[in-house]
Image (cartoon, rainbow, N blue to C red; front, side):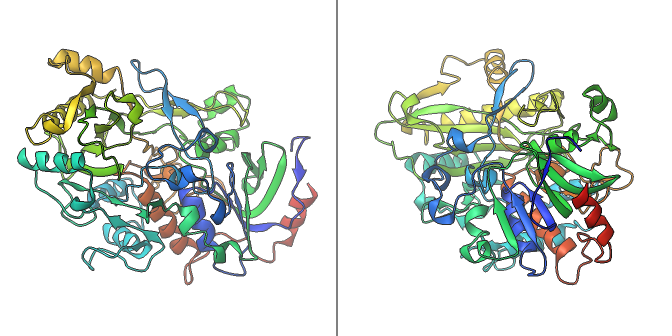
Length: 532
């Protein structure tokens, strides 16, 4: 134990959850529903009261949040894009408080790809049931939609869209793509309005809908903000707590890392869990030699932006419509391309005061990146390398999506509502110039995954098992986007919530074998930890 560590004076909690984002908040609400289980939730950002959530965290058009609510991380896209932004929410609710509110479920094909990694308990049917149970929505088919869950989903209607978003859908239909009314039904492919988690114009983050006033008032739940966790504390190979960057140790019978796809693996690495050679090079004692951070996957994204005609400057709702399709090189049932239509662009960047972005997202990329520590300092950002377009199939499919978006924008139905292409610009016409422009200006769709992936015994890349338990140690789990072995072909926030709901029920629910708690007879363990 380092000399600057100091014990938290409170008694040992049953569970400490590190990270109050999309997953951590769900876990805190679900686990603390059992009144005999004590839960301590630690959030690196501010833990706002429900009646004091700032406006940028409630406004669905404010993406990402203000600087105070963002980690400010940077990452490498590829050799053409050596530094791009990696927006991640830093407040109670995490990225669910700063995202574009798209509420689409992972597809059966996505879940089947997960199961190729040897998982148990994640069948397509089981996952579909969890999605349905967590949802509340007044529309759609009862066979596929939930009515009473905590997560609000509202399907946007065509009539409720802006004139330019309607034109995008109409132009796409004219190009031969079928209209779809519900992206969360089996008929997902093609073009239509988004489902969103927005109610009465307010973003419905997990901090708002899971941490109700009733939940926050539970005596067995402690929520603490502004706590940056450095690493996990071990007694031999058993996790006994976490230590903050300020040296405070928070003890628990089980630790759950839900700090997100970048912060959770960084905590694991600082704790001695990761590639042994990398850890030894930083002087970190190796607790478990595991491939943490070695399978990062993120979806590349390109902003194809247009100025709006002065007669069509309406820009609410900001997130509006999607063309979701299989590329010419898609495999099996995968829907690997998005062309999104949104107004998520500063209108001052447009000469007319309004803009629409027809962005391309490659949502089933082959390329894999890495996350590594730069140092042992918890305040120093990890080195994040997305390694976009390392695989040729990714390049081909991505350009296909960009060309398709431009074709829709130039369709006679949509073209009259725009006043010129801003990015890449009307002068970019031939394939070579387009490829140069596109691959020189790539961003992230904001859906990273797989930095501590789930996998069965035969999966060489697995860091955790099917229940989020870190391999080779006891008392430590990861439950967030880190553990998805493959990125789903949708915005990841609903899937992360599903993961937390699914594992909360599977591991900790009534009738489930609660793997979280130390046997009550192990008083010597508690005494040893508190006297260390």
